[in-house]
Length: 206
Image (cartoon, rainbow, N blue to C red):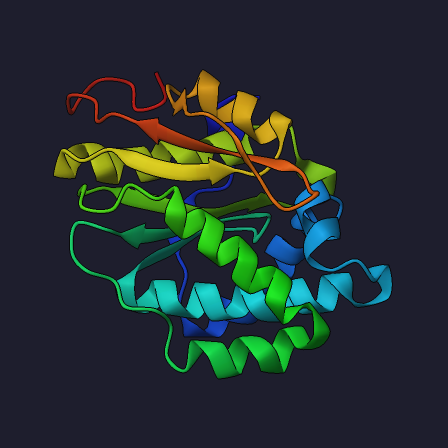
C-alpha cells in the first residue's frame, strides 16, 4: 500500500485517551505477553485497556500520543531526553485496574526497567498498535516513520521492547538493532531494541 492511501498522523489529546487505550488493548489481547499478564481471558481486554489508559495519559505529560486520523492506529512515545517520573499515584491506580494481576504487571515493569538504557537520551516507543483487521496495511510503518522524523530532528535514538517475534521483525526492517531477549517468569520473551538517529532528510524508515 502506498503512503498516499494511508490516513495522516495526528496528535492525540485528552479526549482520545479512551479510544487509544481500547485500540491498544484490542491489538495486544491475542499476544503471548498479554496472556501472561492477564491469564483470565474474560478479564484480559478490560484490564489491558484500563492499564494502557494510564500509560497513554502519562505520555501526554511526558511525550505524545500519535494517532492515525481514522483511529486505526496509535503510537505512544515518551521523550527520554529529560527525566520522566512515574505516573501519578501509579501503584494505587495499577492495583485498582489490575486487581489480582497487579503483581504480574509490576514484574513486567521491573524487568523492563532492568533492561532499560538509563542515562542515554532517546525517545521511547512504549506502545504501537494497529486495529487487528488492518494490520499489515502499512499503518504501523506510517506511525513509525512519523516518530522517527521527530527523533531524527532531535538527533536522538529511539528505543523500545518488542513483545513478539512479528513486531521484532517489523522493527528490524525499520533499522532497529535487537539486543539479547529477556523472559517473563515462565513466560514469553521480549527484545530490547534500539534505532540510531538518521541524518535529517534521509528516509526515516531506512
